[in-house]
Amino acid sequence: MLPAESTRPGARHDALARNPGIDLLRGLAIVLVVFNHLGLRIPLRKTALADVLPTWLLSRLNYNGYEAVFVFFVISGFLIAGNALRRWGSLERIDLRAFYARRFARIVPCLLALVAVLSVLHLAGVRDYTIVHANHSLPRAILAALGLHLNWYEGQTGYLPGSWDVLWSLSIEEVFYIGFPLVCLLTRRRWILLPALVLLALSLPFTRAMLDGNEIWQEKAYLPGMAAIATGVIGALLAARWPTPSAGQVGALYAFGVVGLLASTLGGRWLWPLLHDGVMLLLTVSAMSLLLACQASPPRPWRGFGWLHSWGRLSYEIYLSHMFVVFPLVWLYRASGGDVTLGFLWYPPALLLCWGLGALVAHGLSQPCERWLRRRLSRPSAVEATAICPAG
Image 1 (cartoon, rainbow, N blue to C red):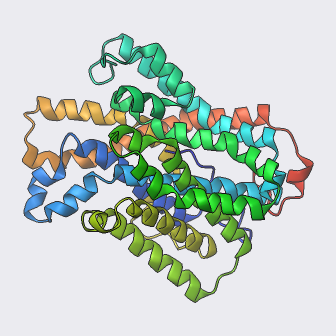
Image 2 (cartoon, rainbow, N blue to C red):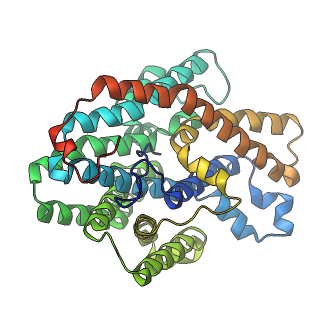
Image 3 (cartoon, one colour):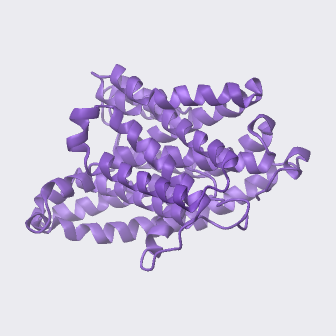
């Protein structure tokens, strides 16, 4: 889930600015992830909100966390490929050392801190943070998390505790980015790379369908997630070749993106019988459409939605740390009597605390460590100096 680089809205905008549309989309996605993990324990459809809102809507608010992660995959592919294009001019000119250094600096500090804290909690026997499954062990979970195959490990042995489980998406994303620059350098031709990316992106419904029968592996296998990331990379390539779409084209991209995302998330109960796993392809293509629209014409920040933009900026830190809020709040909820009709009242403090913890992790750990590691690991690149729009 998904440590994309800083948003760069395009060459005609300041290179250090953030794109409010992309931050808003990331914010919505991470809120849905938190709602999902709360909803598994305090479902909104069983609360008093069901008296005023349809239960299907409340269920969709709770159970779109998986779809939200795939939106993150698309955003990640779009941002990281787009930044590479601006930094080096083309994907076949990627500086391997600089690329891997940036990924390492962004990923590793939070990952190591999370694994260390979870290991201590497991050894202390803290409920909901202790690995209890007979097929699991702490050393093997650590190896899976740091070795970027936690998704495969869960598919073979069963679910880990929720605070470990969030790392499945990071395993998929980072394995993709280990191979991505190597493929770009080996192919060295966009007419070879682009069809391969398109085939991978279109494979999403088929690779999911082929894994039917193993629920965990179907959700967390490498290829479906990589197909979503490839969709984002395709979007970045399209944006580079189509930098100034007309107002009508931008409007059509926004319309398709919004309708497609709403249909594949809120309307999934009706679409799945018709499209089956094709709903996931609709989701990823719709997310790419929105990203293209936001890149071409960044929307103005919406009044009253600054908090959601902030969630988008902190999405990686919130994603890794939010289970340290969810479990304690659920403990308090149950200790207070567990009145499910008032369960919705636990959602606002959960959101506030998740944001606060994410901000604390970002400002106290990930951002300082990322800056320090980039200075230590990066070197000036002659190729980077001639890039279209070098980014810091």
